[in-house]
Length: 584
Image (cartoon, rainbow, N blue to C red; front, side, top):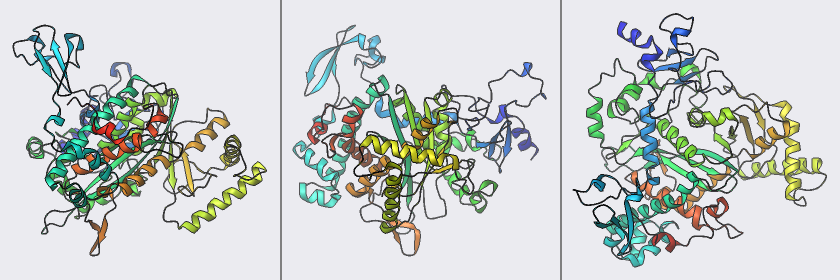
């Protein structure tokens, strides 16, 4: 016990140093002077404080091996995370943006260890071979081509049909029957199409990092859970993985849907590495592979005491609780790959978004009110929040309403609109609708609401619609310094509509992503005949669905989300993806 007290005594011993420029540990209150202040960024010799203490934070123990960071100014408590683990996860999620590493194949050449992507001046293009780019090393004159899986891909004539069947909810067995292929060929083609999708998206979305002239985007973020079927009748536990998705409310473009699962990890090796450290005296965030769910951690979380919310609040209301996973004995770890702590995936998700949107002038975030999303958002956007370029809002929608109840609320909005505008909503122009809703919001801003277990002030949004009939909105970043009209504009655009629309599309158009059904014996135990057995399949089909939704699916005006965002000039036909030249 004495050893544990000594370990928690100092912030410098408990909070990890920044890793590759990231320090995720700090106060997440943007109204506080310590907002995202690095706990290690101070000179002790210039401070008149007790030797060994920290001027910004103190350690607040919330349980054995679960130290938290408490701000000395606003007293906000946040979990301590592994900076290295978050960076590892961000590298994993953004790997599709990296160009393949091709270099001179001559082992005696000094360019052998320098890829084309690292220094293209060392090489020159030298035509093509079987549709693959060919390069020549300027030093030794050796030529080499980029490999392409299309060269080894059989029955390429059915690839277009395979793509179209996949995004039109044709199940695996029916696809095999229609195309006259085996189940092995089906999954081989799924792997191939996933590679095509990643290459296509890398080619387009890398332009975002360079900048495409966007002045404003309105990002909305939400999550949904997916259940993998059990493969062993004697162990009827599912693998539960969480998907965090973000889309633009202005154009509808989906920037990413990321699962808390890494298929490339050898969990056995990770288990061995972690076993070398004693968890009794080392907090979880300082253990090797801190981002991963290892068997030891998974079994420990099943104990009763770990289900008690900190400070008596529910998990969703409590900023000291970021975990999404519900461990009650009905779930298990995947047989291959590794489950990632959901909060690490969320931190990495927002870091990737900040990389993609770094050249956009103004970014407005609408966030579902779930555990961990707020802290991840604050960490990834700390500098731009301070400068006022990024604003964040919670959005809380009432669920479980019937269609009739929703229609009644929409009718109430139309009546209020007519009173304020002097004409009906249908007869009003787009500008009149916008200006009227702003006036309605301004009338409500002086009467913000408080809701239980929330420190935010909430505005009941006047514009009721069928997707969001009763919406509460709360500012997470400072807006009081803005003009009232500017504040009203921010409230008006807060919505989760775009990401909810994509999640609905994915559920309805991809058979593997259809909602699972509960087994009668246990509501938490799920089985669905079309669900995947391998969680990696969810990652593959979701990325293919994202590409199709952004680049191929046309709106009523004939445009796609990618066209509206500026990443495409026209809708992309399926063959544009199937025959995309892929350098991997």
